[in-house]
Length: 423
Ligand code: UGA
Image 1: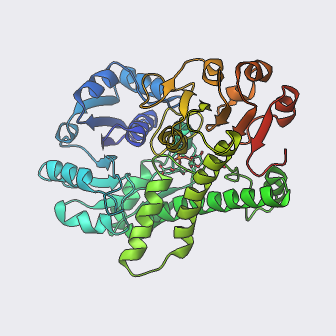
Image 2: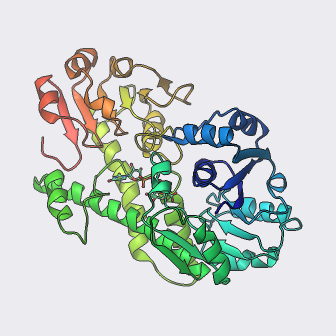
């Protein structure tokens, strides 16, 4: 059955939610405060690199069940049944999530939300927020966390592992859950704090898993084991699973760093010493420091004055998102130590402070003492490594994603430095 929905915030979560709910047959009005962005969206232009999203937006616009307006209040009508909050909840100075955007939207719509409407929070908010914000509006607040990965958000939305909804008002939670009834997925109707906790607990578990695997990779390096074989051996155990076991330059992006810090903050605020999570966050900083060390070693101890070719800046392949990207952290540290950084990322154009950004990967490696692969773009794998070797001034390729073929690099006369893999 078609429902009338308002979505506030057209970032990757809001726009995916709006476009996919329209795809499921609902009537969706998406609001943003950015007038120019709304104008672009009305013209079917999507700024985010998210496979399938632009097509869904165009389809929704053509079918007339997806609209874009400026300002949250303009998205609410007398027949709006659910309003989704998809505005940013960045990390505040104290590590707690900053809820000002959520609160300001609620303040804007509180007087105009029709009776019978529910407010659903998609933004990741600290445990207890739905209940705490309830005083601001007369309609029920439902936590409905998203589990979308950047780069596959549309696919994740339309093929979810689970739908989680939580509220003190179970009927309202069920109503939000029913919006997804066309999708085949288990629906968990919970209380609000549990629904909010599912999201943090899941993201923090993923971060702990990656920090663990990154530490295992470091250990493999020191004992001469091959982390690729080790994780394959681990992955056969269904309790561990095969996915999310790839070591890298540390985890990043707009979610895991923010959510781990926020859950740490929640634990601190209730007097729980969540040492395990703290260690995972610390390991992530060590991982980035270790990559820097490897690059320094490739440059005879110091990168000062050395030209370094950086391949990849996005926090993971398939996106153009630079938020909390380990690649950016590492490139900035190199620049801070006096290196001359030339970078290439297939999804990034324009200016990057302190470095030269080039469109051609071969231009990025020209004259480099060391090359470092920081994002797992598949096209880096198929570069002509003999040509790279000819263009470089040095010999070492630090492959933080274990992406490249070591034999091929050796054949080209290059030294392949992977993470947790014997050369
Ligand atoms: C993450 C979660 O995976 C989603 O389930 C969640 O919905 C989302 O956050 C969110 O909270 O909105 P995302 O930030 O898009 O999704 O990125 P991931 O694919 O989880 O990657 C996170 C980081 O881990 C990246 O830096 C990636 O390169 C790294 N990673 C991932 C590895 O180093 N190794 C792996 O095996 C997997």
